Length: 507
Image 1 (cartoon, one colour):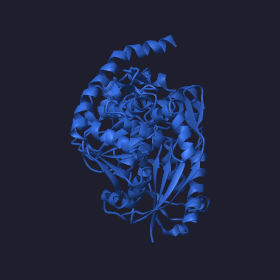
Image 2: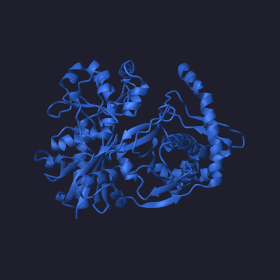
Image 3: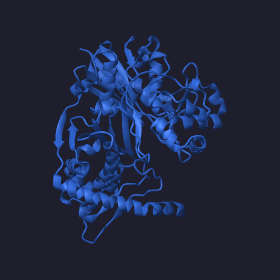
């Protein structure tokens, strides 16, 4: 039998997953590592920790599955994006990687903005010019660590570094190149205009190849260390947020998915970039050549629900412990007993500020409309409704450019049946829930690997992997009610926007 090995290189660890070429999940294994948080806004990781985790997880996966490493047809990747790892000519890291969560490069973003407007930057790259992207971080290194910058041969993202370790080749691909912040969505190459504004040496950026490109084969000198067979094809893969498009079936225009995790996002597939006049959404280069992945990501979705569990639902936590159930099951029962609209309670889910669609770092989490007759169930349900309302604003922007009638939902939040129905009603779309809710990145990487080595003719192979277990249809009366509540949701945010900034200034 032949297998596909997928590595999902995340922030807290690397998840290795083995699939049969028929699409069956064989085994998965996760090896953790640390992210180092300091100086308030700085977040770094050691690249060698990624490599150690890939080696250990590959060995353990192959051992526990009882297969021969030579049966692996391809290795491919899903990896954290928007990083900045400087390596020398031999691929040795010159310093820890500055990862996606780091926002130290505010000054560098402002330097770029003095030379190119936000709107022009957005229409070239599909993104706002912020400190989150790799090019701004590299500028910070040039200014603050000039010796490191001088020695830098290439700048890589996480999965690009692992591809180098396995093959000795320096490459990136469109989705991760796009996450570097100086990518041209029209040419699918580095943007001359943005690079000119940054003053960064172009030769420090790796060559851009397709996501399905076979970068090389597992080299003899690392095969034993990685627990892999020498000569195994290594396929590039892509950035995790975009690889999940494949794993969730978003492989053609209009195909859409929503991920409900600690943060949450809604993404579709189009054949043209989606440029919003207010720049509320962003557009990624898809891993499928010639396609795009317009997206709206909110900061703290499931995170807000987790906060409610810890602070408001202590009784449900105790009850769940007694019953041997999940606290979220108890919370979902509370939410189900609350009416549509949560008895007039509205929750603004901005506890960590907000990205899409607000782009407001000052925004705060807020309950509005509380009355003596409201219950904890109303408060719990309002959180689910508020998160979904916020994402639906992003969906409206995407809908203006793409026909969207059904949405595949994944992540921890997709387990809740009451939340599934809330999504169906607020999104006014059929909600499809796959059997595997946490494997979008892994399945996407496996399919990319299979297409790369021609095990599959095209990306429709995801149908072998993705099985739909539940479908929720929107209720017409509920859709109408939520349409009215959404207007109130928008009015509440508009009324408080300036107040949030005043709260921030007051400390």
